[in-house]
Length: 198
Ligand SMILES: C[S@@+](CC[C@H](N)C(=O)[O-])C[C@H]1O[C@@H](n2cnc3c(N)ncnc32)[C@H](O)[C@@H]1O
Image (cartoon, rainbow, N blue to C red; front, side, top):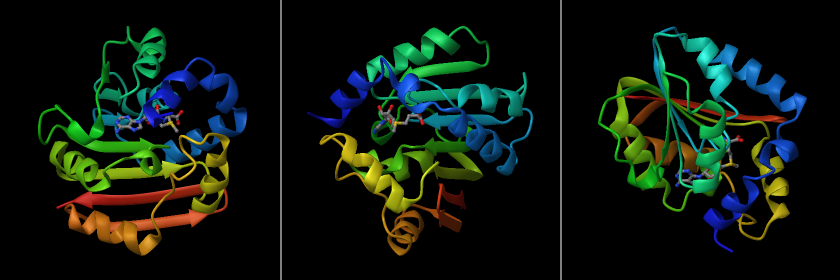
C-alpha cells in the first residue's frame, strides 16, 4: 500500500484514533511557545483532518490567514467539512513537493507530523523555502521524539520506514535548502526543529 493510500484510508477515523486530550494539551503548549502574532500568514503542511487549525486561528486572529494543504483527498475532505467555511482559512489538495502556491507568501510554515513521510525531502524543503517570506520560519514538530516516532510507525507497513533524519543530517538538509538559525530539540514526548529563511 502506498503512503497516500494509507493516509486516505486513515482519514475516516483519524481523530478518534489519534486526537487525544494529551495531544490537545501538547498543541496548546506548542502554539503558545512558537510566538505567533495576529495578522500572520501561516501554511499548515500535511494538515490531515485539520487538528492544528483551531489553535492557529486563535493565535493569528481575524486579520491573519491560514492555508492548510494535504496530498490525500480524504484528509482534505475531512478538514474542509470542519473548517472549509471559515473566511480566513483555505484548504487545498497539494503535494508539498510540487507546491503551486505563490513565492514569498507565508510568515510561518508548520509541518506537524509530516516530515518522516516525505518522499523527496530536498524538493519539499526547497518548495517551502520558496513560499516563505525572507526571514520566515519553518517549524517541524511532533508530539513524539524521533525514537518514539519509529516505534509509532510500526502500526502500518506503508509507513514503517518513515523516520526523522538524525540531528546532523537534518541540519545539513536545512542548510543545503536555504535555512539557517536551526534549533532542534529531540526529547521524550516532543520533537521540535525551528529554522529561518535568509
Ligand atoms: C501523520 S499525518 C499528520 C496529520 C496532521 N498534521 C495531524 O497531526 O493530525 C501526515 C499527513 O501528511 C500528509 N502528507 C504526507 N506527505 C505529503 C506531501 N508530500 N504533501 C502534502 N501532504 C502530505 C498525509 O496525507 C497526512 O495527512
